[in-house]
Figure 1 (cartoon, rainbow, N blue to C red):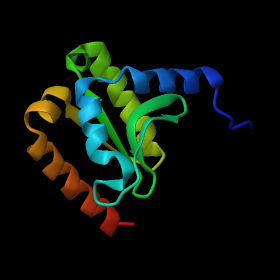
Figure 2: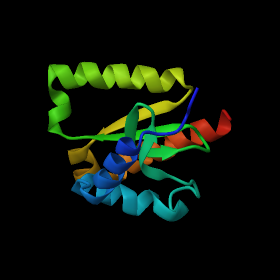
Figure 3: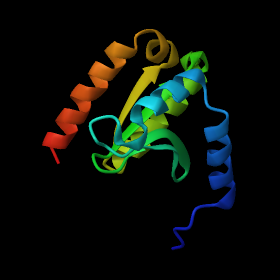
Figure 4: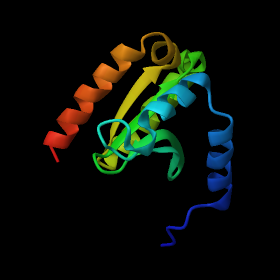
Length: 123
């Protein structure tokens, strides 16, 4: 089986990095360059067939930031399927609403910190 990533997926991921939401930009400033718990995060990382917002290989963590469009029934169903797929790969998926990242950053980061501690301990 050929595990190479489709060039379209890589191009799309790169485009998404350049058109990030305010919440994604803020989260990236916190996570990038091992600033958060000395963990290496990637943004708009391809995990076929999906592109996840943030990914830390070391602890198997996927962080998804959701805007209001994720509140529709179709999106809820799609996100649930996506989460199930990623969890089947042994990954942990955590979701935060954009408005919480922007308006309650401390609460989001405390939750994320506690989750990362738990994942590090269980490695």
